[in-house]
Image (cartoon, rainbow, N blue to C red; front, side):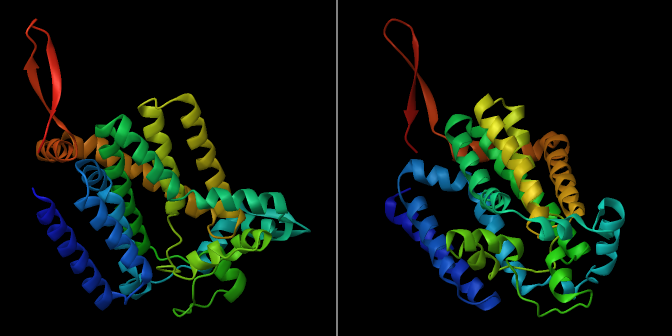
Length: 324
């Protein structure tokens, strides 16, 4: 495939994405960034094209997650607010000052600057860590990288089913708005505001102002992503140091979700369950389907250098990369 052909394909895909986005959710600057990055990587070298194709599940996830704005889940099922709050308090409530409260309410009253900063850093890991881990696997164990990326995408689908099947308000919604449902409620930075205020930045304010759906708190995909990374790190023995880091990020993210008032502990547990369901479906069901294994083989071949065997004069074999 020539450079002009690659550029043409990339531009056609990017243009289609921008036009569809405009009609569904309107224009946003990050759409230009995503489409531009895809175009540059796909039309660049063979290595950059392989890389963007290998990590395509992350792009698909981001596009679908963004498009959720056009189809808010509260249109399809009743939003759970008071019943979820009551169940959280019943199962995991703590007594403070003679009053039964959720863990979120407890930490709202007892937050400290050290935890404000640490949990903010953990929450910033929600996408950078899985993407960086996927990039690491791509250059170390490419087949594993593809399995990780596709599992990540599948876990998101499991999460989306949860979002639309069980719309749920986050704990900060109850704290600020009570138990009445208001579909026009904007996203809120909640306890992460303390991180922004400490450093004098607006990182989380900017992120949550663009929230796709306020009432998509269960399951917590922050919790899911961290567990998927830990699973693949441990399964394929990527190294003690990296695995320790991934485990710390997972534990820190789960705590931060509750501490910052963004998720109930029930949401976190649902996110963990969603990750386990996605991993099980991928590894125990999909990988046993011949057509899916054939798809995986074709996908792997597409993003990998092909090698041909050449025989040296002395009879030894060597591998040389073939150009596609």
